[in-house]
Image 1 (cartoon, rainbow, N blue to C red):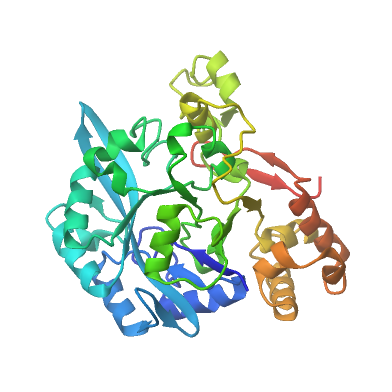
Image 2 (spheres, rainbow, N blue to C red; image 1 turned 135 degrees about the vertical axis):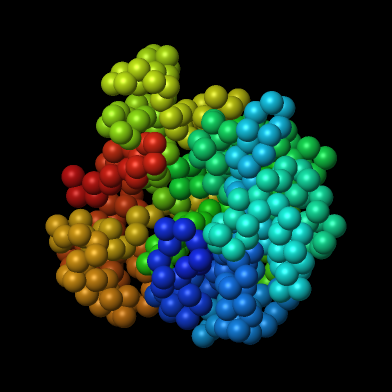
Length: 397
């Protein structure tokens, strides 16, 4: 049975996050989705790490459990600092192999920002210096640049990032062996840059509410512990790391260039033709991920990096049901249909990814089945997201 992991989520202590992001509710939703391993998120927050210590039991090397679901200690930090005359804003995921290490990390970070102000704290700390401090605390700590391409807060972001991971992490770059693709990019987009070939690409939900966990995820061959995950990512071991589950990147909220306030959305080619200026207000456009990838790419579209795990695309089941019924995702009719299907068929990922069409046909209403198959075959239309606004998916058009 594949072992599915979503390694980047947030707790109820992060800004703009559901109060339901607690351990028992996360464990319940992980079972509904078919997720075996969750990152805890936010261990830098004092109240959350105390809840984690109370609610999680040791279940192997560096992993913990609650109600049959495994957890690994993770956090996201926002590094904001000046380097080479420019303000840098980079989000990083941090993985800790134990509560002892996580507590020591929090102690080290306390001099660089207010950890209690947000589950994802702002640190006035250079990424290279942070890496030195963390690896001195415990060499088994993992640092993974988060949503690596988003314009405002990422290692390769057009507004405040760098031209490469090496430029960002300097002497510590050899110790960075994985990056997170983010919702607005997929592995195929990352494969276009040969500088990224050495990195193992992971995909996660970055969820702020329980129902959104698993919208992107990682699929491993079998159960893994902390050291196993570390080895797989270091070695880019595609015999154990089977594939990632991906959003259609156009659905991400920073895929194309644009201005949300002006209702302007442009492809990279259109933006370049317009000299990256908004035709409505005359100000500089927010450069999207697709444009930034084009800037840094040294390969043509369609290149496949053969040593990387492959990927499969998915649209959340609730979104498919809502489209089939012509209702909002949060409506009672959609919620009921979703619960019925998951109860009959086992989990959301089993429905979206694994079950053959013939078996689905026995249980799924015809239009929902058509939506699932349209997504599997890529027979959908998407109005790309831009400048913080998610793309709009048309599954039945």
